[in-house]
Length: 248
Image 1 (cartoon, rainbow, N blue to C red):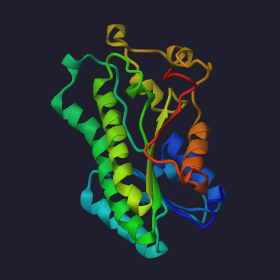
Image 2: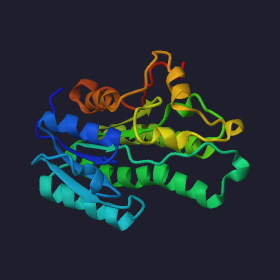
Image 3: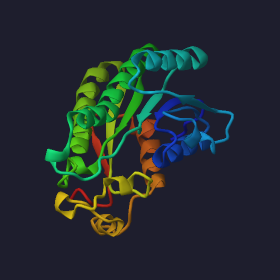
Image 4: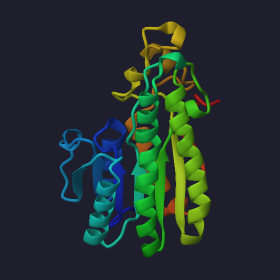
């Protein structure tokens, strides 16, 4: 499962999962372009094969520009990993504004559409590629109060399956990763003081995982490593749960 010389684009590369995925692929000899809303979270990654880019993923012109630059510089795009996203603090639907709903759907789902659209156009020229979109175990096991977030991640899963069948003739594989409760800065953002709305503590999240531990960013990196590799050349349209059994 060698990634030597491959060119990958990773969104959300400044977060816990994203930076771990980037670091893992860089150790395998890949060239990685990390994209995030700010460069700060990527400052600790020091590698000649890593390029940091700041971008609002809902800016279609900027997304087009970035993918064009990557293709012109490296001559190909082998993989796209969409990790960028935002959480929802647990709240009843009566407290959810339309603006908030649109924000969550935009960042978690529309951005995946925009990046995938660009990636597919260049992967077709290169004879194929692999796209991995990060969803959430909450799609399979919803909790109260997270309706907007869950809807956005459900859209990612449905979109990925549709894109997988569309991209298959061009050897473009598209898969979804559903992480369970993970040891990242995002985890506390799902909690709420309003327990009636389904707010949970860190202990609650941990106890919800049958294997007894929170998912680590390294667990996600290992799964991405596999799905991008030739070892997964016949895997497309699937949803891989890296959730410690939370979806059971």
